[in-house]
Image (cartoon, rainbow, N blue to C red; front, side, top):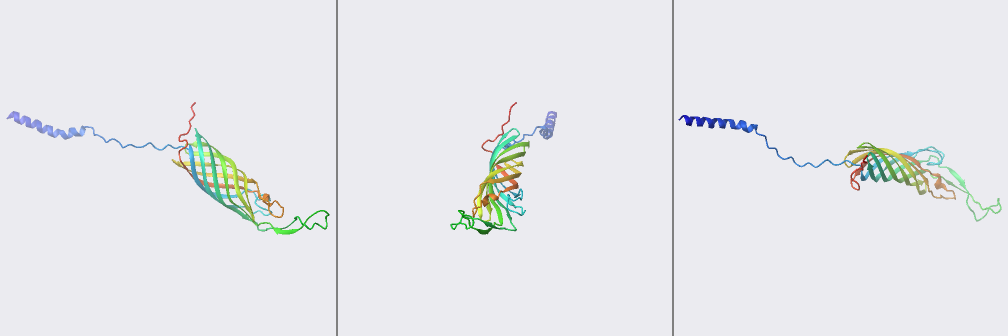
Length: 257
C-alpha cells in the first residue's frame, strides 16, 4: 500500500512540473524569408529625362535680337535629354544631348522704314556706267527662337554619393526667325548644374546654360545680308528629372592605391 501511494505521488509531481519545464525549453524559430539586397546606387551608364524652364536674351544691343530698341527676348523652354555617365571614384565624366522647344521671342515696337539700292537695267543718269535703282521697305518687327539643341560634355564631382555638381559645354544649334527670314544657326553652349539622386534610378537637376548661335544666316531681300544681323545670345535655366537605366556599366570604377 505504501509503495502504491509513493508511486502515485511521484507521478503527480512529474505531471505538475511538466509545464514549467516546457516553458524553459528554447523556442524553435521559423527560418527568415529571403530578403534581396538593396539596389546599388550608381551614376554609371545611360540615362534619359525631361526638363522645363525659361530663357532670356543675354544682351539687347543692335547686333543681338534686333535693332534700336531694348526689348528683351524671353520665353519658356522645355524638352528632353539623353546621356551617358562614367563614374570614377568621386568623379564623373559624361556626354549629353538635348533638344528644346521654346517660346523665346521679342517684338519691336518701331519697325523702321528704310531705303535700299538695287541693280537696275535702265542704268543711272547720274553716274556713267553705274546701275542703281531705289526702293523702300520695312524691317521685320519680331524675332523668335522656335527650337534649339546641344551636344555637350559633362565633368562633375560627387560631393556625396547622391549629390553631383558639374560643368558642361559643347556644340549648339537652333532655328532663328526674324520677321519673314528663317535660318538655322550653329554655335556653342556652356554652363553647369547640380543633380541629386533622390532614389535608385531617379535623379533631379537644376541647370544653367549660356548659348551663342553665331554662325550661319540667310541673305534677306534687296542685297542686304539681313540674316547675319540677328545674333542670338541667350541664357536658360531648367529643372529636369532623369531615369538611370543602370546598364552599359553598372558599377563605378574604384581606384586602388
